[in-house]
Image (cartoon, rainbow, N blue to C red; front, side, top):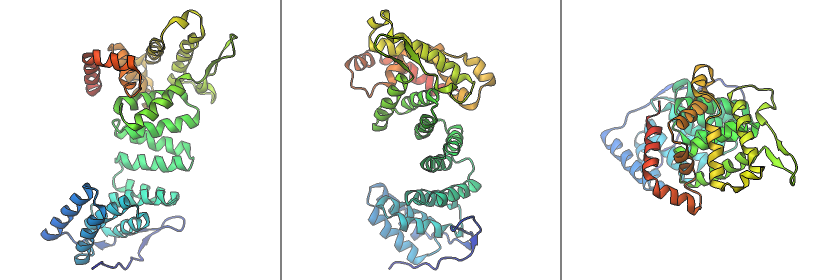
Length: 351
């Protein structure tokens, strides 16, 4: 038997037509039997049996309509089933109860709202979640995704930066922020973020896409018509900005322009790429950046400067290209597993 809801009319005032329910009702904890059923539902969900999991949660809610844990789990399984609106309804209803699951419910409701094109509603739900769990990096990340979908690049940048501060190991945040900077025309920031992403996630489908973007960005901004003069465009200077990234961009572009000299034509593509990364990583003084740089400059430029100083540039460059279908890259990786191991340990231990 499926349970029915009478939705609360006590609402928190919000701008616009959407309002978040006040947590004015008391949740009822699971009995031992209900807890066992919910755990069985979670096992079914983890096996990909989402419809069966939903049926189990419905049994629990029929016996205990105020079981907020079951409300969250059924909403989660409904999302995986593609029943986005039903999941959203369950999640928002659950927000009307006082419970430790409020932030998760708000995040899930925000995700569903975004998927349904209700982006302003999604933002309100994420902002509500932040009043409960302000240091949850996933809330900031999801809000960044929604802002980016709205083409609100400044807000997306701020959200992704906060997510990165809270969890530097979250690979998806690097991709999201790189996309923002690509749209903003901030080439060097995007290059460093994609490089860091490929250190975190080097051999997935997303890694292949990220490497493609990275290679295009590395080639952008330096060109030559025929055998004429080499043209260098400094994207970072377009907005009148002056920071460590613009310094790095200048050094990198000058190195990149050397591709068009006759002598450099004798160098292999892999050697040229390694040379460019060497210049990129060592373009600024890492110790100085640590003293007066911004968060992102410290996170990226100081990290890669230290990486170069530790002698790991070559291992890093080959490591981030491991998804590439290139026999020389694969050969180097197979012959230099010790160097790769040292690099990975250095990265893990980096402060």
